[in-house]
Length: 236
Length: 44
Image (cartoon, rainbow over all chains, first blue to last red; front, side):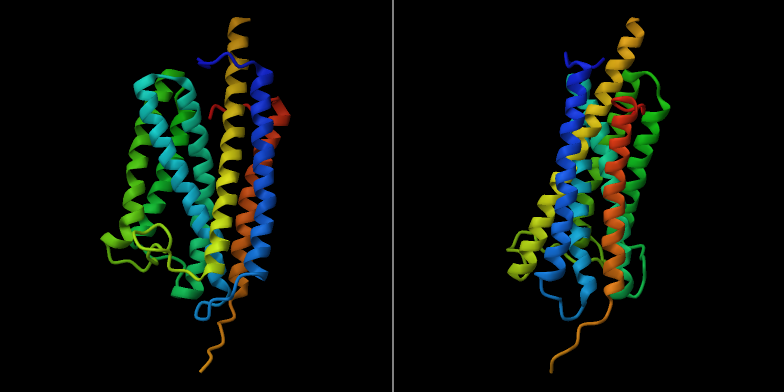
């Protein structure tokens, strides 16, 4: 059910490529820290805590990108029944959960000095937490179902439902009363940030996207290698 | 009148540390899976 003619060595090459790409990205994170701390101005009202924004926003972007791609790959899987799409969806979901972990920890660390509280049950935060639990459930579902076709079909449905939450999360700051700041880049008008801050944010977003691509490639290759080994065992 | 920015660098250090721990930790997890069994054991 690998859906491709890739050999075990080919799968291992995919893993190595993914690990290399994500290692470059993680090294780039050190560059982002340097840029944010030494070459980006301190915001007058929020102080140094505002610089948390340079990891929190790119982590949120990567998590929402990951979950959106899970939904798209899941829809395509239900249509085309190609196991590569299911494998990609599973990889993207796991990586999305890791980025959600960054988003859901750095957010409260920023909120404590700025809002005076670690957490508030407003729409943006609550929906994001719900999305995180939904994809943790997605991964638990995959671990519980043994038949690969059933596993792919059931998890595709959950993946599509999760993707439907993403636009609500983005628009929640417009739809509901919320403490969470409004979008400053992904909005109809021009970005409302000084150029140095915008530069650091965009570089950090590129680095996080690179890490996402590396992680997904490595996770995809690991799953493929496992499937090839299992097929070899079944054939033997 | 100029306003002094608030002193809250500790929160920044905590957030940057947590981010690095999660991302480097996940990379190490993938690398260990790749080296231990030549491709991982999990079902994904």
